[in-house]
Image (cartoon, rainbow over all chains, first blue to last red):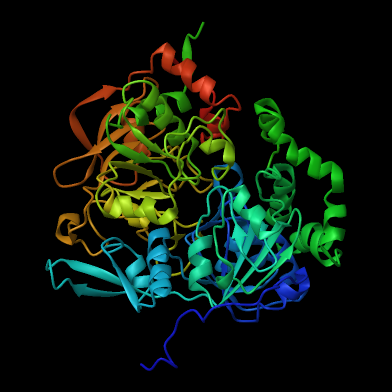
Length: 323
Length: 278
């Protein structure tokens, strides 16, 4: 294999001003791309970029990652996904199985290509290091080796033990949401990074929305940079860009909105289109329209109230939502 | 004064008893019973436990309450450090993780779990997937399995859809014997496999062959009931005991740790009324 044909992430992104608008970011995701969506479960998922992609009617995505929820379920519900290599897509014990994801898999619209967190970690590490594969001991003896004929076994030349080789994973696009960034694309993630730092280093293109674009010196003051600018292709300032997932310290998880989403998704494809896709995506020409639709400043204040104390924080989850 | 406890509290205490002091243990996501069991263990018999939180990877957190989803900043409050995802799984791969907790919509007689898909030849139902369970079931020293769905009520046609099954449709998490019949020990994994199954009916462990066997039942459950609700020929320990309820301090502790009663969502509605004298 020559350098020209070698798979792997591209070079370095040296632009000094990578600021775009949300639509500009969404346009960088093409039909058929292998897409790594950042964040995880109910936290820091790049929902505004995903919504902007759906407005552009993107199709045929292969999604890869660890533990996800409403992000992947929404993409499946809008018909944007053709293959899922995620490790988990669901709403934990709170709401349960992801209705759109499940329906799309069972209908054959989404190819089931499940993976497992450490397998994905090792595949991304291989890409980050420019190696063709990484070995693991685990997963042998499970259904995953049948599901993934691309995994190979080898006998370790040092110990003689059998190892499983998993190939490098180079996403076409990593789609991230961070708390802070600067104009050049340095990103600061607070709290669990999940796979975002590996996605950024392994992917060919990295796009990010951030709550606030600040001067580089401010990023350092806040505690430092998580992902340096030269991995990042473009970013946009999108306040509340992870809603309805959490982006602390700005806002907590919007459980009532998620309950409404879940109820619509559980009602079938048609009901989901009418009760969720129309009001929150098709009828929202831009992010400002979405923010107005979810209740504007009042909703933002409610979700930011976690910071006032444990009782306020707890009350965000106390509300009974029957799904 | 606390006089009795719920099934959820019984299960939390039973899971907590499987946790050894001085080890490193990790709870996954979507499992409030297990989260609470770890916090109970650390505050009672296992003060030296290294407790790693599910989706935040916080080390020894002291969350002020339990949240309905796991990847929430509440869950790593009080943690002075948080691992990243590579380090968490590296710990297991390198043999430093003492215990992990796994479940499935199917758990078979060898302790294999299926959280991927139902249907043998065609996809009948897509399940959420196993997260990192597949890797951890191979790498972690000991696994405690748990399920709140052991009881398998008859459907309209008089059939049962068992949670504890003869054979998983898909093996997400490896137990003691692979789908092709190979013994786990022949695969050379670091971990020793499942050690316990804590269910809504009782406790099972595994015999020398790696086959599940009934060790104890709750006071309101009979051995016959367990067999009726199990999809394979049950094996039994020499004596099948009655599960002891947690002491009152432990029950009070659970109630302080989970003021929103998040863990009850994991317990089936019909089981939420069960009470056990404490």
